[in-house]
Length: 271
Image (cartoon, rainbow, N blue to C red; front, side):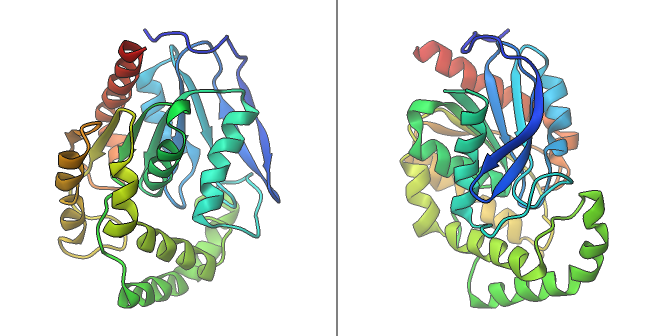
């Protein structure tokens, strides 16, 4: 069971206006501890269904599709990282949530790290799922590789857009979002953000490769956590799971729910 942090809210599904767009969001309601889930870069809120089911109805689950993602969220003139951070504020404000556990996967983990760093008083804790690794994987050659990859994938992704399986961003917008993430993930950019986090934060780390990576690239990137946990006692690796980056939300969700429970318990003990 979780501590009651908010008055009971009715279940809700609808659109959250923000800037020049609107985001499709779902709030399971109730009076349990609020958890807001931040998706992978081009993923949708449905990816969290196993985590939500395992955590259970004693928690208040808030999910949403980012700009131009899914079947309902509207397109925008701004797909920047800062827009993604602003969207967290917009969704929580729309649902009247003052404090929440923030859970992010992949791109969402980087968004979560920035958001909890900027808003410690509004954060019970964070769970970063196979993302937010401070490592210098981006350079000009990688940027070109990303641009080429999205250009080649564009015809197929365009056909899948009506299903919500691929975003409604064009190839250049998708490439730019990925490239921006790369620069923001460099050690000198992301490292100070993680070092300054003051709330309980747990990493759940996958194994093997992720889409677009080659060889042992992804495993080398994950080694950067050794320095992070050595410098900041608030941050620990909760689990290293066998699934790869794309499968862990489906196959290793118990490790994620355990980490969510841990940070919520630590917040309750501190208060």
